[in-house]
Image 1 (cartoon, rainbow, N blue to C red):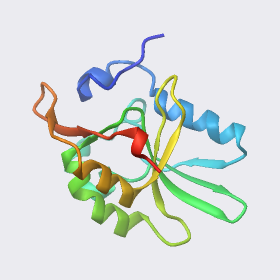
Image 2 (cartoon, rainbow, N blue to C red):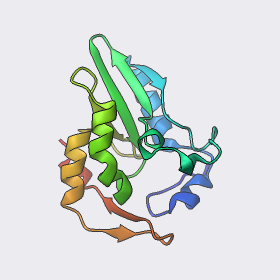
Image 3 (spheres, helix red, strand yellow):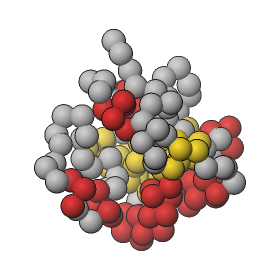
Image 4 (cartoon, rainbow, N blue to C red):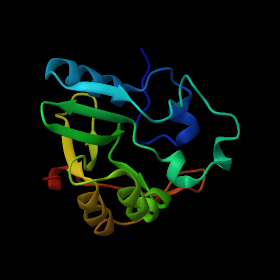
Length: 151
């Protein structure tokens, strides 16, 4: 099976038929008895026509809501440690829209052959801001989060 990787731009990653990060996350939820509900858009199998016309806050809706006992989280799953500049700039609005005291917005990094790492959205801002800009060949600016610094 062919998987995307962090060195590929968006089009390159979409050319493979598997979103490995989301598969890893769903397996983790099943193993750990978390109720996992798909919330956001599935860019691989359920594309929305003219997606780019939607409000950025809607386009960046969390991927999942997970719940177990009294704990609930809104979850963005990442299959790479790369965060696009436009997502970082939007993060305060995403936190306002999707995070609450009883259901915080978190990022879950699910990278093949690595342990899963969890971070609150506010911590992603801190980690992004200490890294340096990089650019994919399509011109999209991003930064690579140091996952060893994820609390």
